[in-house]
Length: 493
Ligand code: UDP
Image (cartoon, rainbow, N blue to C red; front, side, top):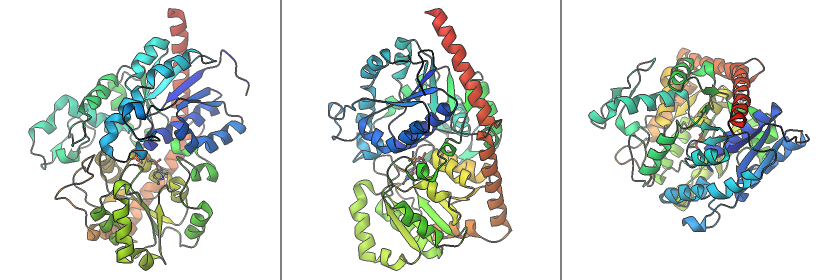
C-alpha cells in the first residue's frame, strides 16, 4: 500500500516483555486490516522475534512498519543482549530494565519528529511512564494499552480507594468493595502495588499508577461479553474512554503465525503437531506458566510429578531461568523424561502456545493465569487449571474460576516473591496438581458443564472480533475518536 502523508499513523510503543509485546504485534495487524498505517517501536533483538510474522503481514498488503532503536543495555547496567524482560538473567535487574526503557525516550522523540507520515497518536504500554512527556512534546494524543482485564482494573481502583486490604491480617480473606460480585482475596494474593515483595521497584510502580490517567483513554485486550459488568464500571471511572478490542490473539489467524507468535518455537512445529495428532481429542493437558514465570525446582518437581500421576497425556513447558541446570539435573537423576516418554512431551524454551491450544487433542490448560494466556485458553475453548504466580494473576484466577466457572484451582495461596520466586511455607503439592487435573477432566456433570461454559465463551470471543461484533465496533469507535483528536490537535497548533 502506498503511504500518503495524510494517512493516520498509529505508533505502538510496547513494553519489551512477551506478555506486552505479543498483543501489540497482534494489535498492529488489527489496525492495519482497517487500512491504518501502524508503526511498531522495537529494538533489533525483539524485531527478530516477530519479523517473519510482520513480513508476511506486509507482503499480504497490510501497512505496517517497524521502527528500531538500539536498546541501551550497557548504559543501564544490563548484560549485552538483554533487550526483553524474559532475557534478564535475574529479576533483580528489573529496575535496570526500566531504566533502559526510559532511555529510549529521547532517541524515539527525535526519530518520530522526522517520521513520514507524521505520528497521529501513540498507543503505549502503561508501564512506559515517559511517554506522557513524549506525547506532550510531539503534540499527539497518548492512549494507554493496559495488558489486563477490566475486572483487574476495577479491583485495583477499588483497593486504592478503599485501602481495605491495609487493615486485615495477611492471610485473612477480605471482600473487595463495590464490585458487581462478591469477590474475596487475602493480601498475600494481591499484585505488587498492594503487596510489595523484595523487588526494588516501588517508586516505579507508583509512577505507573500516577501516569495511567494522563492519557486520552485505555485500550484493553478483552471483550465485552466476557466481563460486561466490569467493563461498564471501568468505563464510568475512565469517562467512557475504554475500548475493549480483543481477544488480540485472534489476529494470529494462520497456523504459521500461531507457530511463530512471540518467538521462534524451540520445538519443530510439525513434530509437535504430529505428537498432538497421535492423541485422542480433548485428552492432553498443556502446562505452561508463561514467559516470565520460573518455578523454583521444588515446585517444578511437584508440577512434573502431578502431571505424571494424573495419567493423562501432557505437554510441559520448562522455563527455569537461573535454576534450569538444577531442574535438568533432577529430570536426569529421577529418570523422569524416560519414564513419561510414552505420553509426556517436554518443551524446553519457547512453546508455540496458541498453535498447541488450538489443537483438538488439548483437553485442559494448566496456566499461571497471565492475562494473555487466560484469553488464549478461552479462545481455544478449553477449561483451565489455575496456578497463579505473581502480578495480577490471582485476580485472573478469580475471574476464571469464580466468575466465569471455566477452571479449577491447584490451590496456590500467595504470590511468589518477584526476585526469589519462592513462596515460603506455601507449596503446591503433586497431589493437589493431580486432584485439579482430575476435576477438570472429570466426565461427570460438573466437568461437562465447565467445558460447555468455556465453549460458549470461545464462540463469544470469536464473534466479538467479527464484523459487527463488539470488539470490531469498539475498534471503529476508537479509530473515529483518534481521527477527531487528530483534527483537534491540528487546530490547536
Ligand atoms: N507464550 C508462548 N510460548 C511460551 C510462553 C509464553 O507463546 O512458551 C506466550 C503466550 O501465548 C502469551 C504470552 O507468551 O501470549 C505470555 O503472556 P501472559 O500474559 O500469559 O503471561 P506473562 O508471560 O506475561 O506472565
